[in-house]
Image 1 (cartoon, rainbow, N blue to C red):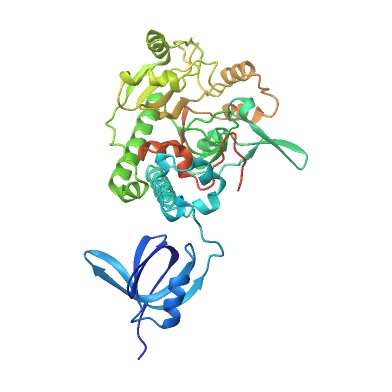
Image 2: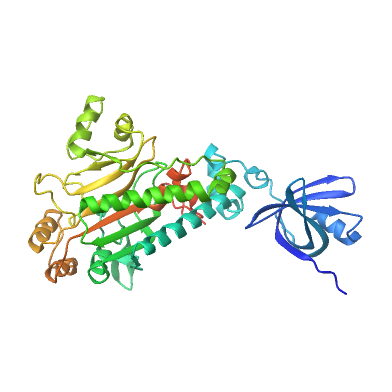
Length: 425
């Protein structure tokens, strides 16, 4: 009768010998397992193979699981197959991982991302991304939202033209999408509640820890919403994600050697953009109405709240044309940005959208957009039963950085695209 063995497959991460017994650390998607290789049990050929196999080699082992001192380990009985590495890595971030959050050899980790992705800390970060992405998608579906797969190639930049990445396809000048908001505005009039989680591209000249050239956007559009509805919705989404991570991702935070952000209580505080300008100026900041609120200005606002807070009523000069103008204050829009203290900065933005054709045309001309040209289909939406609707946009990597208290958004991207660095591999 043949002996029944379990199988363990993975990559050799570390090896230690104590007399006739070798202890191998084998890593795979389930984490790291200690393998016990007893030369009195194995064949001579298998003992030689395991002792000479280079680190980072792949292997498939047959054996039995057992629990020793409360820890599950694998006792190998037979080496089924090996896939030797032709080079033995001496990279400390691979062989002996150090936390990304401590700034481990950043240049090295980016140049050799195809190898550094094996780092158990990077593996944990990518698992965190996977879990939170799945949670958000499920949460939105349970709220009645329908996923829309919007195009990445578009004729229409949403934000500043200078940050749009242009390409030519079959002789047509196009852009990589900055945001799928226009397409969700069209879809919401058929489906009422829609969302998209997908890539966005902005060529911003920024090396801040919250910016990437290619990042993922969580976009939501809801019919019949006003600004208060979309603020309440966004707070529920953010706190639900935080509760999920605190409850289900402590193991990944431990692997990443990071801390988890405590779940914030709702509702979040609000402060007007005009009041932000006044407070920043009183604190010594050099800003005026119409300026962007950047990291320096946000830092001066930390005393306003130690929890996430909303900056409401951004100037019309800063916001895209589809966002409604406040009828009570025509210099500002009906918008709000959620700011996270302690250096995390803006996490997401919400806006009421224009429903009136004349108001939209006025704003398009103000933003130097031709309502009879490429943008005319956005005018069409207003001509055919356009109802009140609101949008929300959140940087997915920014959410992860805050929830796991990481140093940089790049830590959660398999192959990050960062301003000032070659886009390689």
